Image (cartoon, rainbow, N blue to C red; front, top):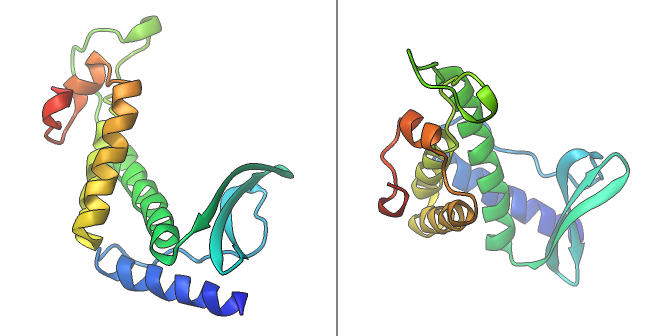
Length: 162
């Protein structure tokens, strides 16, 4: 029975990710990865996403529905894709002032991977896009973009971030 639920989750993730046009979807693992990657467990017909690293469980998301578990995997894949893109497209600004601790500004901004993640989630589903936007808005209320990140943003900022 639990393998059937894993297969249903994999089919949902594959179907949703296909809407992005960004290549292959993520493979749902059912065994511990111990590398910081997730695997799924089925408990009482609900999904549990478990993150393990170096032999220790670091995080567990329990009691998830199919759509919640799929959204989690899709968000993780979308943010990984966006972060890889950000690194490839990053350009150091000319004559930029030093950033905190006297470091050289290399053009980094968290917003340059957050915004594409939101866009990717929006392509999957408007509700997933809104969820991603709210998630990142909450993150940025706790840890606002620094001045250099605002300066280096290549995507339009959310109104509350300007």
